[in-house]
Image (cartoon, rainbow, N blue to C red):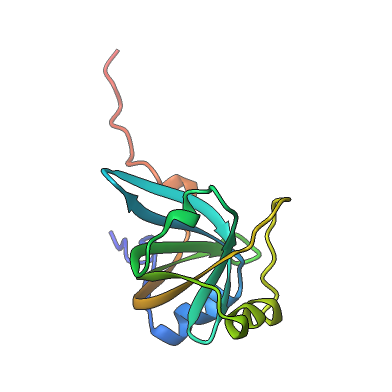
Length: 152
């Protein structure tokens, strides 16, 4: 039996494709350690100048990111037909920035928070590693192995 046609096709993405997919969405999850705990939050972002920008407010966990704090960001999506999915993971350093030029860069890039309230803290994530993959979504009939008939 030839099962090659039923196996999902997985393609590792190059750096340029990873950035192309990141530019196609504005929602990701950011993960970082906070003491002995791993925090993971959904945030909106904008890619600009080879980095990601995120805005947050005072008192949030994201606002506690220290200088050069290691973070991981994951963004996922699929095509309009729901047949091909992609996932990009970016690992890097987060830095809270207050420089007027960088703040203007965030405004020019269209970064605006989704939630109401003061979101005056700008975080720039500089990547050290970026990887991704794209794959064909398997049909539901391929999600579970066939069951052996049971003897009644």
